Length: 192
Length: 172
Image (cartoon, rainbow over all chains, first blue to last red; front, top):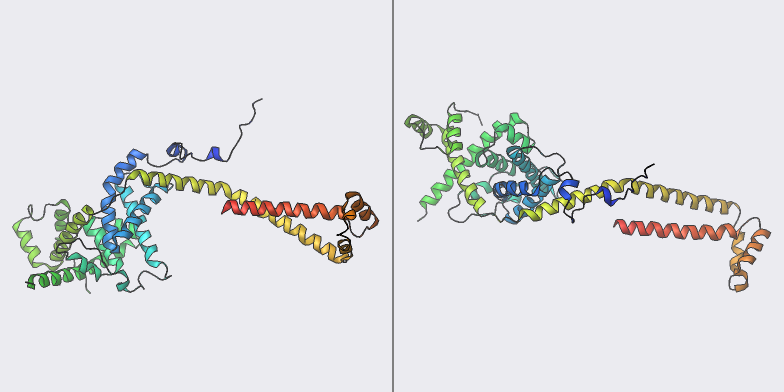
């Protein structure tokens, strides 16, 4: 009769430091695949976080946290495109959590001055001042639609908003920022 | 605000998405975009955002993926440890509850029988009384209170208390 194998607590855990974490933890991606995915996704994600939050340091932190959470997710979506969309969803949730803390209020109730954009790319950045006058939600929608090229349905999945409302919200936000951009351009042109 | 979408918006958006605006655009469409506010807004906003995206992405400070990879693995491992630790925590709480119940029952029993047993404390300075045999004899002579029960009970309580403190500190 065989003796039962001893069941130690450590035996059922991935031995991370010994290097068998991917197998034991059933990680959805191996380290090489993750490195490739990271190389392709990190910069767009950082740009999204930096432009929407207006804080490059915050973008650094949230980007790292987004990737860690992406890897820790039990069943992240398969494929590069779906994976990136999932990553943006995580980042969007982290941004929302950041804005809510420490105030326990809705993102819509917080005054826009609280989110003033301070990130500037330097030379003649007309988008920065215009974005600073948009609400965080509008910034997110505009960036996802026009910088990342996501469809309304994808934006709905990322932001958690109803797909039907994205079209109208985006239309309003686009019209608002377009007039701000035109004002900004005419101001710059008038300057000597 | 009234939403007035343009039928050319999809076509313009597709050209912008492919990076073919305005090179692959027909003169008619270009004339339309110049005249149509919705399409003009679309072109202006998309071009500005795409430019900002490439500019901002170039300025990104990117860390090595390896560090994030191991950080995620450690977090997964800690989560697994926590999952496994949940039943153990339940057992600890159960043991603590039993312990507290015993203490309360013991105190209730003693309260009902009076505090006469404390008289042995008066004789405590006398080392003679601390001898186990004497304790046993006094316990046998005093059925209301038994030091044979008291001493092991206190020792057990002290031991369990120490275990609880140890487990709590280990958890922290």
